[in-house]
Length: 481
Image (cartoon, rainbow, N blue to C red; front, side, top):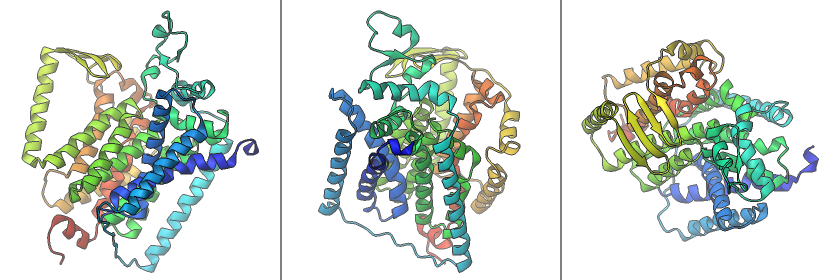
């Protein structure tokens, strides 16, 4: 069946946006002095994919019929512009030098882990190409939009069933899931891009980006850890730990969901937040903002994650002291309590009309949420320590967290990247503990999918504990011993 599609067009579809993203990320980060090829490859994949979807949306706004080679030409021109800027050298380029002589046995063990990662993804590729099953939610919420757009040659509107029944909506489409019509369209556009390349929607190679996304995340994770001063073996172990997680692999094989993209975008954004905090270089602030926007365009929970990233990015920019952070958090908590007690009614841009009345929150596009405590901790404990979705991850997390606390010697306010991670976990727990979605935790329908979001960022923050003493002293401003 692979012979029935254009291999060259498929190759272009998978590599051209990636190359374009790498060109722009290299142009952006080379001036910071804290950058390497792995970071460029990791960030380049996701920013290139994001650029590509934005060009497709602009193409449709201009009234042009969706055409693969036309859009590919626009992406190619964008890459050429990036190359021209590279040669113009509008800013001084600072080379990053990483010096740490790894023992031979470290190199041998790291190479073995890389070989295991490669073999694992070869088998995942085989499963993806030959898979007999399709992910249910992907075919209920995401794939139908891409298929309709592929056949229509334009990004026709999708409405709720009630809106679709109204007169004048004959040119629009609807879905069985009422909320799916309002979901962000970036994920269907990723599918549509490959469909346009191969000339059909009915082929498993449409979902190859779901196999490339975690690999790009692994490259970015390794690059960031190495720039942060984490030794070769520890950085490689971090990548192996991430890329061998059973639940992450499931989302590569049963592709089509948005969750793996949200996890990767948020994870790399937390890495950019760490670099933004250390260097205060505008390039990392811009990268953080771009990844936050990508999060918001992938899935509705990504909007909350994007807000978390922007808040902590702004804290670094404004250089708010830790005591002020605690004061602002306390004020925000008090304000939230007052709003819940007295109620509020107002219009929120894009999201619709917001009504808060006691323990009830109603927001236009989100719907009605009843705030009530639900004891679902048994579900969290079971998925962490009994089920095989996360393998040994959570058994390793506890001693690593205790080690990080010991390193701090005293209890102190964590750095911004850790606070952003904790806020993401707080969001996950709040959704399942205080809302109607507690049922999805009890039956494990979406619990693991939402838990996937902060996992790459958590692995990054934990493995920062393995920084060499020299790099720690450099980042803290103290002389190396």
